[in-house]
Length: 220
Picture 1 (cartoon, rainbow, N blue to C red):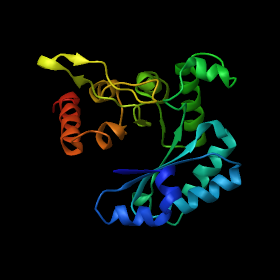
Picture 2: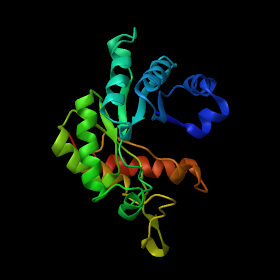
Picture 3: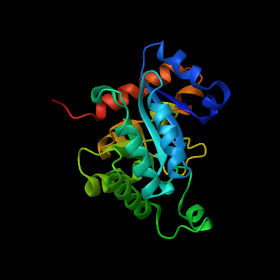
Picture 4: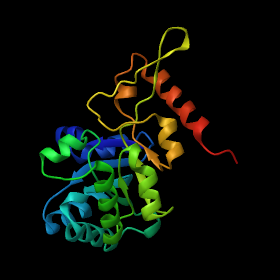
């Protein structure tokens, strides 16, 4: 899938979805809706009607009622069930660590808050959540094997001279893992952006990440 975030959507709007869909891949509409229930319900109704959208998200910090309204908007759609996009909830942004959470009044470790938000999302009827690689195992234990977990903050290790590993580049992400670590933890989808788009050779970077993912998948 191609992920369309608020940067591109603000610049180009729904036409960006249609144009990227014409290239073939499906779309993860990453707009993180977070508003009063009625407004989010309307946004979800509009989002799921865009061509090729397979995943879209809301922010779990909007609360149970907001997520229930989003789920109802999805369920009330005329889209055939087999084509209905999956609705997922963003838990705690991967750019935030424990001190950053405390600064905005959210007490306790990020891992505990993420699992609680995942449980609320599941109660509201969402299909899964977005969470950092570090919380995947705990969410899986709390919410079961059929609950989708979408993992950003994926940062491959960078090879140094003579094959030595240098420290991975984290950009503005605080809670990260390699593609293989995220897969082995139980992630269903990985979100990979700057490790590819900012690489000197994006195609080579993408192929390397795909190889690492393949190496971590269970062998049949």
